[in-house]
Amino acid sequence: MAAAAAETRVFLEVRRRLQSALLILGEPKEGGVPLDVSVTPSSLQVKTPTGCTELRLPAEVRLAPSSCHGLRYVAGDGLHLRLQTQADFSPKLVSMFNQSSQAQECCTFYCQSCGEVIIRDRKLLRVLPLPSENWGALVGEWCCHPDPFANKPLHPQENDCFIGDTFVLVNLRSDLWQPRPELVPLETHCLSSENHFQLKPKANTKVICKRCKVMLGETMSSETTKFYMTEIIIQPSERNFPIIPRSRFVQSVIAQCLVELSSARSTFRFTVQGQDGKAYILLWLLNSDSLVIESLGSSKSIKKFPLLEDILEADSGSAWNAVKVLYQPCIKSRNQSLARLWDSDISVHSLTLPSATCLELLLILSRNNASLPPSLRCMNSFQNPGLL
Figure 1: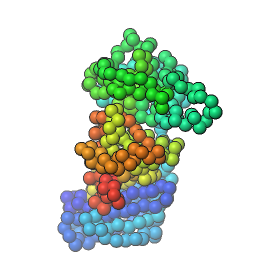
Figure 2: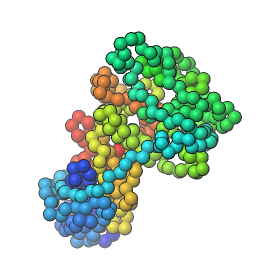
Figure 3: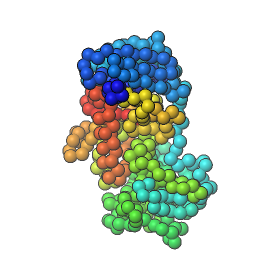
Figure 4: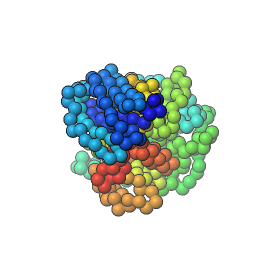
């Protein structure tokens, strides 16, 4: 019975802002098996002649059983129907680097992949966000005189940390006595006239973890180093290094970045590119208010839906906060015309990551897309929708 029950898949996506939910009841392998579906405010139950699958909802989510509508059968998926919900759970994004609480504290920078200490006990007196990457091009619209910021890059001082979209800038001058990452010398170039807060090298000096040899960032000047947020963890020095699975960490950082940028700048399309400027993925953010719950059939094994998740998890073990995206890969010359079109569109925002991390993210998206019900895997010209 347990084996047969495990064959019934229950998938529920709750939209908190819309107060609605999509329920998909997968059909058992044996075609034509009758299903007895019971919907209560706090649970879903699917009975077959050979077993029972039950999905209990988090305390913050309540269904309205009398609102069930739009029942239809989709080949390969099973039964689809929609319900009204009451979803009080509304997570607040917790920044990877809390500016207010961690300023004035001593922090330690770790390599996320292996836990190697990169910077130990750095007291940060100022933790400040950097302006957007295209702010220099707008200076002419703000000022009636020549650019007052020309040739004045915003490099951090010894106790500063400047935060960009996907990176942090720190000054390593005071850390000469501490363990330092390896530097791989490459050709550098001059300061860009468009991005005054950073150097724009043709090929930056890579910063490599001594232990695991992962690329952590790039040197921007003799004292300033850029660390990518997907490669490091910044913790108050009194705390221990947190062990977080690599794929989960990458998903969390990217999901947080998309949500924050869409909220602050009304930007919903993104190009994920490597540090060499090569485009790897085109992302289109659809929504950031999804709560996804899935059971593969056993009431004892309700598990988190393995998708690109938000920075916070729901308190209940069965729920997963997610943002929904469409994506297209750009590797191996795929979607090049679309990539060029997006590159020339000022409403598209570029996110720069190490090339290896771009490939990691693409693999994660592909895996997550494959775990969705078949009918949710395609949308218009974007053949790969998923949840972040």
